Each structure stands twice: as structure tokens, then as C-alpha cells.
Length: 563
Image (cartoon, rainbow, N blue to C red; front, side, top):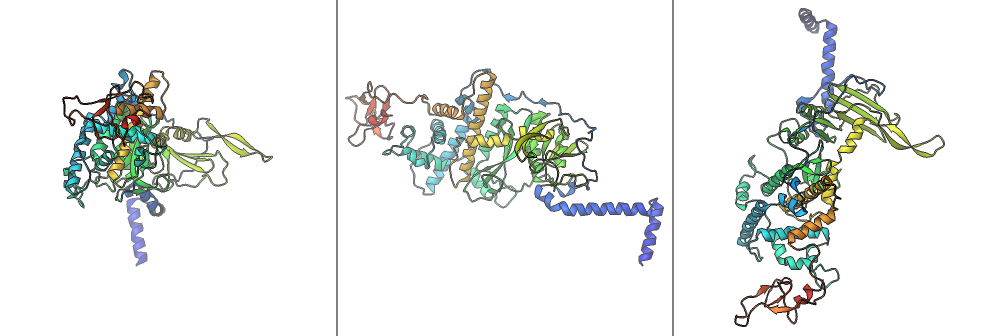
């Protein structure tokens, strides 16, 4: 039976014009491809590749810098949709920190937050929660934002510490802006979405129509649009992850062992090289509208929007995103790409012929070109694998490294470095720079309400982007950039509506208490609210024009003028 089937197969091959040796070679190649797919399936799936994107094993040997690269790659022509940098009307004249921040948290944002916060407070009171509430106004919300920024500059372990009085570490100014109980009430009731729409969304749990970001989506979308409209990125941009710590018990919370913040909300961020957050996405789990090409592909394809950016941008990303499938897609869209890659990625060279090993000399370079893709391996302290569509193999670039001489001494010697590695180190840091700047003077506080964590992060993004835009404008005007602390202090004063220099001099000379009522009026009429204790008082300072108590057990007039 076996001989008969073999004879029949040979007859079919001769009829088709295929020799038996060719048939065996073809079948062996298919068998090798199937083996390669089986070996790489777990790694590729973990990295986010789609099963149908698998390609055969590459047989080409690795080349050295002595081999000539016949391709001459050039970066794509840079044609952005708008002039990179701050956009009008910011470029029409000098801008203060408050002017730039007001473009992110404008009147529409303040009205939205006030309306939803008042609705949420009403619902909480109806459920029996005990607190005193009066409807919040945009002016009061502006001062609340200023207090959050003030607390990020003057750090204290607990929020209540800012209202302590009988201690040398007291901070008396915040008590003149808002009482502790009022600040607590606003913090616990702050809401970004309509509670009625939240209730409708809760009825959709378990279905594909359920939106896990409903409670934060309005502000997420608004701030994202503000980030994209106020500033246009320069040619080199990067895609990276960002973790925002949270104590909330939600399914959206992720774990990333390689990040300093290991547990929290995961944001995918498109950042400029100066740290400006251009665009972002909050990861909520598996997406029903995924393309089937893997999460890493979908993230980059979604963030890198040609209709917004234009063409000619060079995208830098780490090994989680880099794949031949993604880089060819970006190249078709008119973008360049560069990034480190994982050996388990489908489509990368797998040949070991002339490859680097543990005995390779430091500075050794190997490369393989596959059309518009260039795969480069470089031996530094360890092996570095790069993939690029816009860089040549080597342009005589060197880097200094410590090495032992023959007599056992250490000295810095130049070793060759691939062009892609140098460019990657130069421009990939946009995401890390953004994370560092967001962590400086951050308003983030521990909370179990994840929407509050998102609100704090969006406020940090608005302040940090405002700071970057302000410094970009000052450099355009050939002025010295401000420090982050000076910027945030000036912004706080603007939100409070007070001069940065602070209240009057400590001396009470020239400041006299006078009655707020006339003799013909009743004692309860014409009273003012005390700036310190927020109580009703018939006394005020004639020079400061603010209500201040003068009681035997409470002398707010003296406290106000003592700092």
C-alpha cells in the first residue's frame, strides 16, 4: 500500500513537471516554517503579534560593517499639518502661566465639573451621607485647583496638616482661602461625568456597550483635545507606557514589574522629545474593536494619526511595540520608525550564521537588511537589538566606554556605535522626560476613588504641558526659561487671585478694625464672613477690606496680620 501511494505521488509530480528532489525540498521548507511557527508562537502572542502575521525563518547570514549596504535610507520628507511648537493665539504676545493653563481648564471645563459635582453631592445627601454642602461655583473651583497646586509645592503628609494652627509647621494661608471641611466636601464629591448617565451605563455591565471609563471620559476627552490643539509636536516623537498609582479595586488596574510604579492605571502616551504629552489612551482591557494584529500594533496605529500629525514623523518605541508588521505599516503611512526588538518577534532574523555571541568584542556590529527594514545588533555591556526604517548601519559614530588595558588599568576608549542606537538614545527619552516632569510637584494623593486618581493625573498633564509651552515661548522670545517651582507658584497666585508677594507686611501698623455695620442698622445686618475662620463677624480691617473676628477666645484680626 505504501509503495503504491509513493508511486502515485511520483506520477503526479512528473505530470506536474516537478522533480522528486524539488518536492522533498519544498516539503522540508514547509516543515521548517511550521516548526518556526510553533517555536515562536508563545513569545509572539505575548508580545502582541497576530497569528496570521508569521513569516518564514530568515536564512541570510549577519553582515559586518565591512560589508556595504546597497540601500541608502533617508528620513521621509517632513510635512507636518501645522507649524511645530505652540499654536496661535499663544504666539501673538507674552503669555503668563495662568493664561496658558486657562486654555486647558477653561470656562467650559469649570462649568462641566461644577454641574456634575453639584449633582453628585445632591445624590450623596439623598443617600444619607452627612456633610454640609452649598453649590460650588467656577470661581470656588478655581481656588480649589489652586489649593491642590499649592499642596504639591508645599508638601505635607496629610491634607489636614495644612489647617493646623498651634504648631510651628502651620501653613496659615490656605485657611484664608477655604476651610478644611469645605475642601473635604469638594474632594469627596468632585465628579467629572453626569451621574444620571453613570446610572444608565451601570445597567449595561456585562455587555459590549458598557463603558468602564464613563466616570472619567468627559474630562479625559476634553484634556486630550486641548493637548493636541495647543501644541504641535516636532519631528521626533515616542510611544511609551505610563503607570499612575492607585489603591482602587478595579479591573483596569494593571501590574508592570519593570516600572517604578508597579500597580496602577496604565496609560499609553505619545510624547514629544521635550516631554510634552501630545496624546494618550487609558487601557481598560480587551478592546472589542481590535484589528486582530495585536495590542502593541493597535496602540501605535491609534496614537500616530496621520490626519492630525501630517507625514514625515519618526516614531521611536521600545521592544513591546516594535515588529516588522508595525514598521511596514508606519512606512506605508509616511512615517519613519526606530526601536529595540525582541528576538521572539515574528519576522525578525533568526539565523545564527555570523551572529554575535558572548565572546564577541565590545563594539561589534552585525546587520541584515530586509527591504526597507534594517536589523542591527550591537555588543555593548550586553547585546542590543535594533530595527529601523530611516537610519544607515554605521556613520563612523563612536561612544566612550571603560575598558582594561594590558597593564590592568581602566581607561575610556572609543568604540563604534550604530547610528540607530545613538538616535534612539537621543529621542526615545520623551516619554521618560514626561514621566519625570509629571512626578515633579505632582498633585497626586492616595485615594480609593479611581476617577479622582484620573482627575489628579489630568491636572498634572495640564500643568506640565503648560509649563513646557511657557518655556518654549520664552525661548522663542530669547528669554530665560522659568523653573518648575517658580512657574507653579505664579500659577497658584493667579488661581487664588492674590499677588505672589503674599498678604501685607506682618506689622499691624496702619491696619485698624472697624465695624461692618452702622449704628442705625441691626447687629445682624451688614456682617462679613471672616477670612480666617469663615464665621460671620461684625468686624473688618479698613485697609485690607476683609472680614476678621475680634473675640476674647478668637482673634482672627491678629492672626491674619501675623504672617
